[in-house]
Image (cartoon, rainbow, N blue to C red):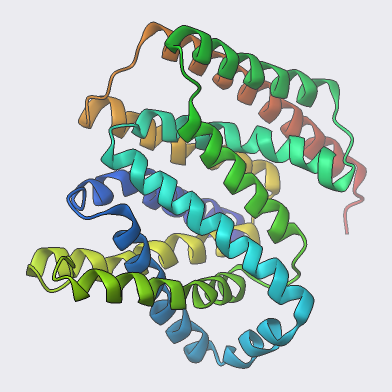
Length: 298
């Protein structure tokens, strides 16, 4: 099997993990989101640390945290990704998985906008049209439902800001995420200590809940590792296209399994966003093909 093919399958595996994750969090809907988040943080620390020890890269982690600039950037990234996780987990528990999928559909367009704002990247006509369509979709949904899709906006914005942070770091995703969850672990320990102090903690109450909470570590780590594997083997255009599998699976789970409401206004807004993504993806694919033609063969 060629390396590019392996990369595509690794990307599919990562997006399938992420796309079907609402099914996992639905099993824990009786556990407060902040408690699930605390467990996800701590079990991820253990899982990622074990990986770095196995790879003999644990010293790299110390070097990153010891660097003042990297420490500040990682701290902000940790806040953004934990906030993103918290909103996503909450969305599943309050019956807003459709809106969460909308947030992850919108994320690529938010990244384009943030690239222009933070890095001075120029937007082409197709990108401007795609971003404008996404904005119109949000305005349409807000006007139709009488309330803004806050979950979608918060998920897209927090994940977009997390992407900005990642762009400023030269370290790999496994090391950076390990550092992020380590920075969050003291807060997670305080949350779980205060929860269990009152006798309300879910861990240890039943075997099923305890096992599910422990699984939050590998469920976080495995797709990130396969995603990292994929990014080294396939083009960004391919990654961008396959990544839509994640919100698509989330959307199908929300509508077909959770039976969440999908109104006329949702249909109009999603149609606009899907059109925007089609325009954006076509432009990216066009740029990728042009770059390949311009690159001389070895």
